[in-house]
Length: 278
View (cartoon, one colour):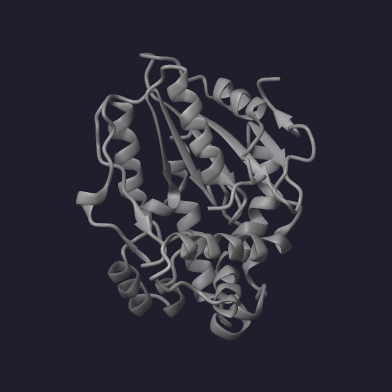
């Protein structure tokens, strides 16, 4: 996946985030959440944080909210029962929230549960035998996700379609109301497991298509024999994420423990906007 910037985030920012996590060897699990829109560099920052934590002698690992997507079969079943758009991974309601909570709770208790992994090019969860398992109880888990800790929208905000996808494929609002209800009822229990939240803030939603296209090209370059999405398919795909992404931009700067503003090149172009630790 492309690093933002190419060499990754500044070492000073990584060190500050690691310190903010409160993780200490043998002191019990701390969960550092990294939230940000598609392509913003969450996975890059998570990998840097894990490497820095391990260099400091901490037991650390990362997992993505994406790794807890429902299987393709489960999403097809939802599509038949509720709305066809639920076959597409991404929006709230397409994650196995119970599995995520159980995994984090097992880690918090000092257990060594396997960490799920999702194959984005194959659009399905990898078989359990391919899930990595921590070697020892973790001091730090970095949980990254595109809609991590985003609150639900008020019901009145759902009335008008937001984009072409909603106008043409969800004109009566069934899909978006179902996703918003899931975000309201199911996800807060998972969000409550996050001890510290950092938000990677893009300049606007408009950059997401380009960022996600770069990500798609990197995935395909890493596995050249496999098919991914073309540009048109990707632009439609991103519309599934637009509503909750815009809600993230409205709300997370006021909810996160720290907000990291990024420019269109995914470079940190301003100091951290808000940090409750001072």
